[in-house]
Amino acid sequence: MIALPFQDRPPRDHLDQAGINAERQLAHYLGRQFADDSRVDLFFGLRIPLDRATGSRQDAVQMDALLIHCHGIAIIESKSVHDEVRVNKRGEWSRTWKGKALGMRSPVEQVKQQADALRTLLQTNRTKLRGKVNLGLMQGGFRGCPIECFVAISDSGRITRDPPDSVPEVMKADQIADRVRKRVDRHQKFGGFVGLLRHAIANEESDDGLWSMTQEERGRVKEFLVNSKG
Image (cartoon, rainbow, N blue to C red; front, side, top):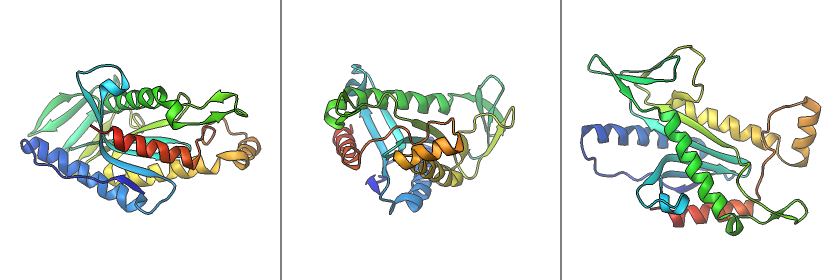
């Protein structure tokens, strides 16, 4: 379900317009996949003032797309690329603009920083958001919550990786929704008591589905984030 809809904004310049177009494209694909899915809460353009997360008053974190379900979180960063983006063996990024290769900040590191800020915010407010766990002996929190990070490249762009199987979290925008849905499905499959049995039977080594919060707690997180947006 959509908790915070995508909102168009006036562009500052042509580069900003390209970024808005990429965010709109991502919102279209994710909305088509999850708008009627009651298992998830989907936020677009959620901006969190960093003073709420880290104590800093200098900046804010904005997530192009955020998806929350009872077994984890996914954050998706969109990037407008109309030619080619390259990632080399050292993890360095560049993009081609008018035939020239220009260095760029790693969007993978960018989305990981967003994940860190979000985790800090939720963990700091855990007593408001979660109840007791382990037979009521411990306060539930978000330290173990899986926060999966993805980068969506515009449909019109090309991704060149060296080696070819590197940065698997980076993909074209039209592939993102299906990848995220499969991750949600897998967490659901291995969640709860039945999921634990499936883990044991399949001898699974992953932690998919092992962290969880209740539907009521998910509702609190949704309300908290909507009220916290800057």
